Length: 267
Length: 176
Image 1 (tube, chains in turn red, yellow):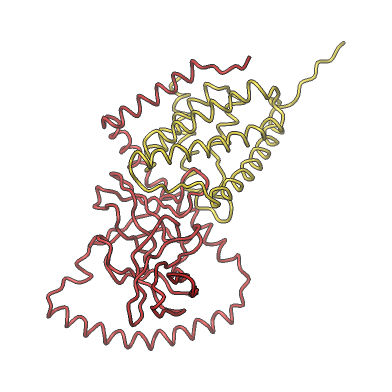
Image 2 (cartoon, rainbow over the protein chains, first blue to last red; image 1 turned 135 degrees about the vertical axis):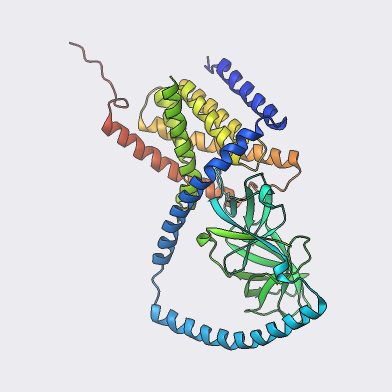
């Protein structure tokens, strides 16, 4: 005869039913808000400590030839300095045009800064999700883009509570963005994560010309995400003549493992 | 009595914060470790099903406050995992050997993960939201990593407890 002890589990299920009832009648909400509000700073500190360890580990993991890396970086600095000079002129020109057109511009958007308090959850395969210590009370809502400190898109808010919000990172396979390639045609497509490892831009018509090194930005077709926010750079183009669309592998511009703080843009 | 409750509450709070905020941010495979489940298994075997259920309820309630899934998903997942693990422990595992602990760890991890997936899928359907926890290769691979790490941790804690106390040592009756 198999022993089960059904009585105590009946009480457990009754407690569960009661808690669900109290949650949906909003009686439990103050307690939940209290728990989340009071423990956010502790979560944040633990996550910072853990991120510090992870960053140190990641930095020491690869054996690199630092002289080669330094040369490569120097070349990039020279290139970027040259580009920067050109961009500064464009920026000035743009500023004057904006003044004329009475645009509010980028400064018209509200930026909300938040700490990541934990990543993933308590189940297998929950990578590519982060929880931020700002929520509906701070003005966040579903669909907003979240950016790294360098202004690169790292994810999108998918759920919001009073004090917290959950965001999917761009490498999460369920996270998709309306994206555009910074080429002559401003080719549009959908950028979405693959297996939590990489990002792919899909649904690019075969007639469009895209190449390695092209930058991918948000296209502005999503209601709450302004256009022109940098997502990444094309590292490979997959073009098969028998396919309806071509796609491109995007190299993200930030290491998602190093993220500790993010900012959400409210247009 | 109250002191005991406060002590237990502090312990489970530290455990949850450590798991969610610290372990989840560690490098390599370490974030796959389910410290909470392993702790619940040891509580179940060493302190009994009532204590394990109280811990499961408290941890579940705490996690549900942070979770963006349907309220009660963690509460139900941990509670029913303890119920199922207790069923296996009482009816099929009669001693407190390392193998019993390992079998319980494997069973509990599989039960918890599958039940959690099922509930989160149900939750997505009810709330009409996109399901972020599909049954796919990524899940299978993550589950394998979690199983491996949980088994390692259970073995480690078992040997540490065995070293520190006599509670898990086999008892032999000697005829005089």
